[in-house]
Amino acid sequence: MSTSKLSVQLYTVRELLTEDTVGTLRRIADIGFTQVEPFAFLEFGDALRDGLAEAGLTAPTTHQGFIGGDLDQVFGAAQALGIQTVIDPFVAPERWQTADDVAAIADQLNEAAEVAARYGVRAGYHNHAHEIESTIEGTTALQFFAGKLAPEVVLEIDTYWVAVGGEDPLTLLPALGDRVVALHIKDGPGTTETKDQVAVGQGSLPIADIIAAAPDALRVVELDDSRGDRFQAVADSFAFLTAEGLA
Image 1 (cartoon, helix red, strand yellow):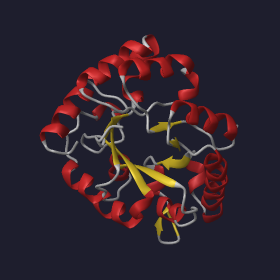
Image 2 (tube, one colour; image 1 turned 90 degrees about the horizontal axis):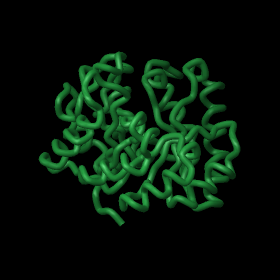
Image 3 (spheres, helix red, strand yellow; image 1 turned 135 degrees about the vertical axis):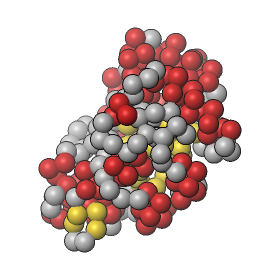
Image 4 (cartoon, one colour; image 1 turned 60 degrees about the horizontal axis):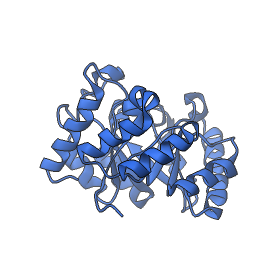
């Protein structure tokens, strides 16, 4: 099992991964990564399983929409791949505007976590900016949501979208506590334009301080998009985090 706390969200290299799943995973391993975070992993089937094995990579976490879906299919497939945590990456902004709606999302996560546990898997959620921008009972919708979750439901906090949403990740992360098991580490000027994102260490976010605010969390490198080559940005991010002792 890897002792590294670094991973990479494969959505960053989605075009390459779709064209050549096995070859792209080998390239990720050649950079030095030992862990990856797949997205929509059910769609890749055997190619993902074979690529992980051939590249010597593990996938402790994955993104996969499961709210309202076939939970047994999702969590059973995750178990078969050795994935420990399945993270639903998106619930539409309109569902984060009232206390009742946010509580209903939490109920769905809690129910999913019960199914996940039958497969030895955890269920979690990943934020964007809209869960931060919405305020419920004097706090962010994300924090209100966290207060409604069962103890076994976990969070992956996208620290860049927290900043875009108007909150300081250095304040939010300690407030959410041990429920945060993974971070999306990305960099840029903190704008809503995804093409503004750059390699970790080349933007304006305080990366070392963010990691220190959740030191036990998995550190998942991601770029939603970029004006430069995203694969090179992944390599540059790995180099920066390793050089800074943040791996």
